Length: 146
Image 1 (cartoon, helix red, strand yellow):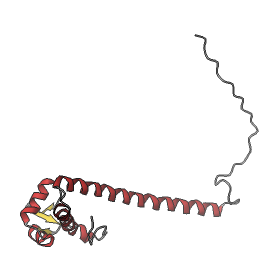
Image 2: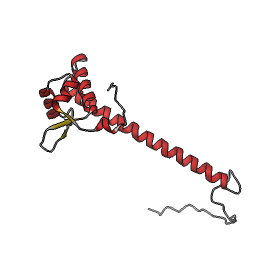
Image 3: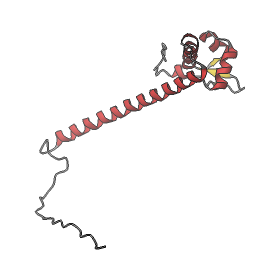
Image 4: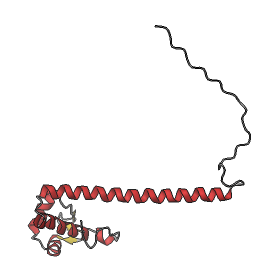
């Protein structure tokens, strides 16, 4: 989805505070269209205490994208729903990758820190006190006669 707010981490971007009339005006649509998109599962507004729909700025960006895909690109609403679902999965995967990369960087920094504190840098972090002179003899098992 291409929107001016996409990827925003601002909590106000996600806040479900816009009444349907305001969200419809911002998206350039009729409120009935928003209700239809809600029924189809294209956009999931929040609900006020009285049951009225509440939209976020993110929802408005999504509504504009639904309109662009359906009107400009000629994609039916089932296709639009699939595209939106795949883009959500991609966004979640990208966030997870970013989190894992940050964890990996932190682990590498920790290893480097521990190695710098070691008595013998570049060797194992856990020193071994003795070397083994044990000899292990391996003999293959004999297969039982059939």
